[in-house]
Length: 327
Image (cartoon, rainbow, N blue to C red; front, side, top):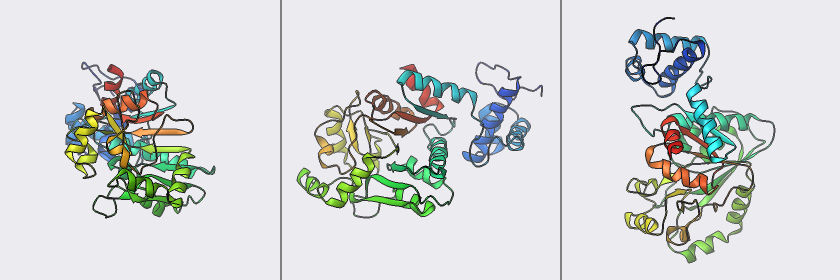
């Protein structure tokens, strides 16, 4: 195939089998997972529409992708390896970035779903703890129905929204429906009205049991949020603008399941942390705690969480990985 199928950088032609498969896998990801048309793929990969069509066909004929990306793109693999070496983590995956949707959750959710499904299909019993948010919900929506009754699912965060309704991003209940696994939702709001009320409800035996199960999890999957004017906790109505600003004044750089932490990855004292019912976050002692996040705004929080060992694994996208490695 003599035509340049994909230009990685500086208009460098691709003329070997691995690079052609990389280009085909990237085109397949854009088509089957990110939902791009062939015209959009041609524009994003800077090739003709006919070449984009051939790349998608090659991806399908070589079974590089089913509804998941089966052929790891070399550039993504290299970035994942660099992340592991730089941050001393045991697990890293890097999804392709969609040029038109920087920080979109489709790619990282698909990669997280692949790991989650592999764990669920294992015969070895596991305790799987899951956070909340868009990436977590999108991850679970990619899990096919199966029987996984030998596993336990536990929520790291309350499943009740500030208005008393069920959280729109609760992932545990949906995953339990899909798998039949025993599950332990957190039957509390994420945030309570006062530290005193929080202490009283955290003392309930059922809540303590959920926290104890979560502490034994062999796999934890969590989102990583930024704390600025676009903070998910503010956008989704869990915190007011004033409360977010207070956390920033206290040195907060990001949050995991609501727990605000500083640039060194240390959970801060004060602020909304005093009213939080989520399972406490501490440096990882056992098992895998994997952050699933992407986007320029999340690069700083991810780096801080890695520095403080609040996570010891990462699923992100190319652009975010490059930002992390550049700083």
